[in-house]
Amino acid sequence: METTAKFIFDGKTFEMPIITGSEGEKAIDISKLRQETGFITYDPGFANTGACLSNITFMNGEKGILRYRGIPVEQLAEHSSFVETAYLLINGELPVRTQLQSFSVLLNDHSLVHEDMRHFFNNFPRRAHPMGILSSMVNALRAFYPEIPERSEEEEINMTVTRLLSKVRTMAAISYKISRGHKVVYPKQELSYAANFLNMMFDSPVRPYEIDPDLVKALNVFWILHADHEQNCSTAAVRLVGSARVNLYAAISAGICALWGPLHGGANQAVIEMLEAIQANGGDVNPFIARAKHKDDPFRLMGFGHRVYKTYDPRAKIMKEQCYKILEKLKIHDPLLDIAMKLEEAALKDSYFIDHYLYPNLDFYTGIVLRAIGIPLNMFTVMFAIGRLPGWISQWKESMEDPHWKLHRPRQVYTGLNQRDYIPIDQRG
Ligand code: ACO
Image 1 (tube, protein in one colour):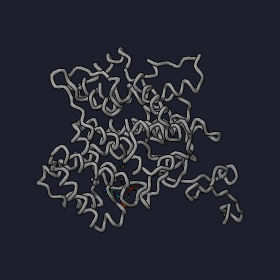
Image 2: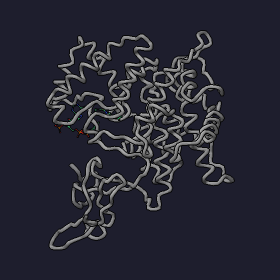
Image 3: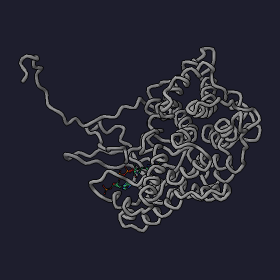
Image 4: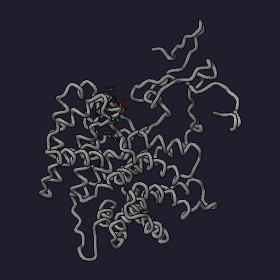
C-alpha cells in the first residue's frame, strides 16, 4: 500500500503523506503543500477537507453508521441517558456508577442561573427568537462567571463544562416561561436532567406538571441522537472560533449561532413549517416534490438530504420509531405525521431524490416528537442546541489538547481587481 500521494506539476514531483484513520478512511496530508509547491487547494464548503484528526465520533455516510467513542448510536439510544452519553463524549469512556452519580450531582448543583441574569431575559422583546436569546446569554455567562486565577486550567475547564451543560437547559426553560409571561420554575434536586427540563418548561402554580417516564425517555433519545456529529457546521464554528483561544462560552455561543440556520439545526422548525404549508394546501405532497425538483425554484424538501449521509440517516430511523411510540402512548393523531409519511414515500420513489441520494435526515421526524411533548415550534432548535452541547464541548476540548493545533485561517483565491490608484472624490464620475 502506497504511503504517499504524488503531485506532479511542471515536471516536478511532490510527495505528500497519506493518513489512514482507525476505520480505514484515507486523507492526503497537504499541510506542506503551499510551502513546497506554492499551491493551495480550492474546496468550497470544505466538502473534501479534513480539518482535524479526531477520536470522538465516527460516521460513514454511505453505510449510515454513527458511533460515539466507538459505541453505535442505536445502542446508546436504547440503553443510555443523555447525561451518561454526555459523560462518554466529554471524557472518552462510559462512567462507572459512582462517576455517573457525582456527575449528575454536579449538574444539579450548578443548575441555577445567576438571578441578575433574569433582568436580561426579562428585557428581550417577547417575540425574540429563543436561539438569539440563548446565544447572547451563553456569551454573557462569562461576565457572570469570570475565570478565577487561583483555579488550575483543568478545574476551570471542568467548572465551565458543568455550568454550560447544566445552565443552558435552565436558561432555555426560563426563556420559554418569560416569553409566555409565566412564572419561572426552578430546577429540582430530586429530578433527572430530562425530567427537570420538562418540569421547568411545563409546571405551573395552577396546573402541576405530571412527569411521564415515556416522555422523559423520548427526550433522552432526542438529545442522545443530537449529541455529536463530527465536523458539522456548528461544531466547525466552535472549533474555528475556539482556535483563537477565546473562552468556551464564546465558542459555544458561536456554535449556537451557526446551528440557528435553516440548513442546519433550524431545519427541524422548517420541516414542521413545510408540513403545515402542505396541510394548508390540501395535503397533496406532489406540488412540493415538484417544486423541490425544479431547477429555478430555491425551495428544498426540508428534512431531506445530508452533506455526509448518502443513505437513510441512522438517527432518522430511531426518531421515526420514537415518533410512533410517543403518539401511540399519548393517543395523539397528528395529521402532520401522515403528511410526512406520504412525503417520504413519494420522495423515496422519485428518481430525482434517488439519483441525488436524498433521504430523510434526523430533522424530518424530530419536530413531530417535539410537538407531541409540547415543545413550541420556536424552541425546536434550542432543543437541538441543548443536545449538541456535549459534542461541541468534547470537540473544543480535543482541539485545545491537540499538539498540532493552529489558529484556523483558511486561504482564498483572489479574483478581484488588480492594483489601481486611489482617485480623489472630485475626480470620480
Ligand atoms: N430538496 C431538494 N433538492 C435537494 C435537497 C433537498 N432537501 N438537498 C439537496 N438537494 C439537491 C440540490 O439541489 C443539488 O442538486 P443539483 O446537483 O441537481 O444542483 C444536490 O441535491 C446537492 O445539493 P447540495 O446543496 O450541494 O448538497 P449539500 O451536501 O451541500 O447539502 C443540505 C446538504 C444543506 C443538508 C441539503 O441537503 C439541504 O438543504 N437539505 C434541506 C435542509 C435540511 O434538512 N437540513 C438539515 C441537515 S441535517 C442536520 O443539520 C441535523
